[in-house]
Amino acid sequence: MRHIFQSGKETSNSTPTLLLLHGTGGNEYDLLSLAEKIDPEANVLSVRGNVLENGMLRFFRRLAEGIFDEEDLVFRTKELFDFLGEAAEKYQFDRENIIAVGYSNGANIAASLLFHYKNALKAAILHHPMVPRRGIALPDLSGVPVFIGAGANDPICPPEESTDLATLLEKAGALVELHWENHGHQLTYSEITAASKWYNRGTVPNNS
Image 1 (cartoon, rainbow, N blue to C red):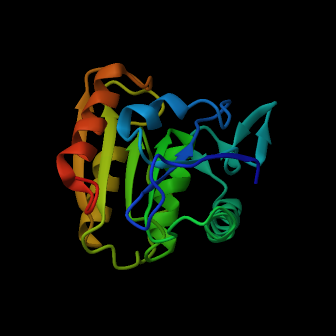
Image 2 (cartoon, rainbow, N blue to C red; image 1 turned 90 degrees about the vertical axis):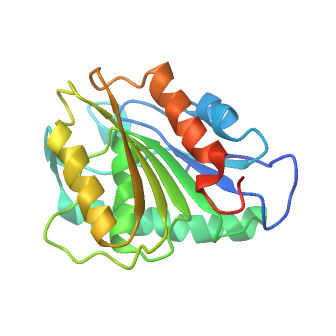
């Protein structure tokens, strides 16, 4: 998968790696400023989606707005999961210390990692995600911190998607903080600040 890797200021097992996952139509450069805001000392692995939709990059196909191609979602989730193992070996970072930061479609593929693989992520910051799949058993996510940023007036990701996702993750044992903005689907400065505060108050173990 096309990507950017930037080593953190310190290289050790305690150094987290921020996995950046862009939204539809974005690329691997879009969220680099978010990583700087959240943890300027972390490693950064920013990945480009492998799917094109009307010339726009995505991480998996969809059948229509809000309707995911579940077969492709499962395939692309495994593709990303396998890539993380390969990248950890190549760049010598701790595979068990990856924290996803995703927006929209990128948040959805990050949520799908949580839905399909135990220990896929140490934690996740999900900006405007939807429930990736319904009616499946989730792995044990006990103690996995998850921040969900949602818009009360989001026309693309209805509020119930955010609350449903939070409930499903909590039932699997995740420690979820659901943060609401009185806006639409855009990623606002106040939402980014809330995610940064969540991360930097020591919510994620060893990152305090």
